[in-house]
Image 1 (cartoon, rainbow, N blue to C red):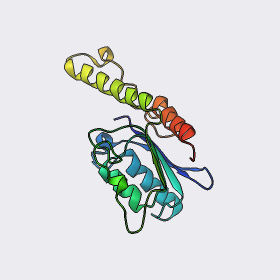
Image 2 (spheres, rainbow, N blue to C red):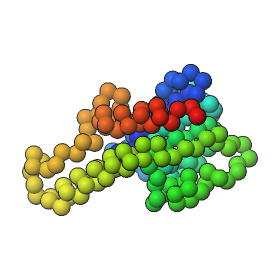
Image 3 (cartoon, helix red, strand yellow):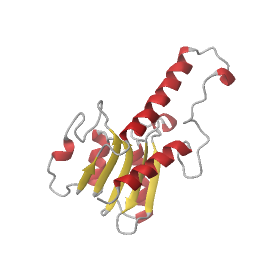
Image 4 (tube, rainbow, N blue to C red):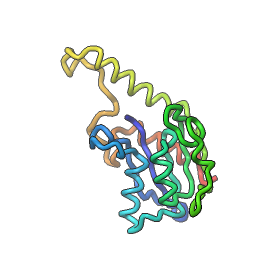
Length: 175
């Protein structure tokens, strides 16, 4: 599923990690873009405490991801499209409003490039449904899935998703 995220150090502006949803590739339900960013950034920093960081992601985090982001002490979350099925920042649940004994997000902002983020998901699922509706087609006759491998250099499954996440960062700013 084309969901991408980057985690940025708020003090330096350095991108600490970037990832995309790899649940199907990894056969691991925890391989969400946000979780993978946390893992990479923790290894890079040498600590799981990721204070003074901002996560930029194409869709509103689910409860699992929001909980992990809170535990990792991420400062801000800026996302694109609402996640009406699993969003935890107000679309489905409002976990972001709950007080926590050791961490509260400084900023959560949604709706940054929401239309574009929604379109990338719609395009992905249209292609997926079209191909599954015609299982006997030869691979060359199936619609090309723009999110399929090979990955671009930065680890995203294609330049469109990578560019979208970077634009969310640019437009979301440091607020």
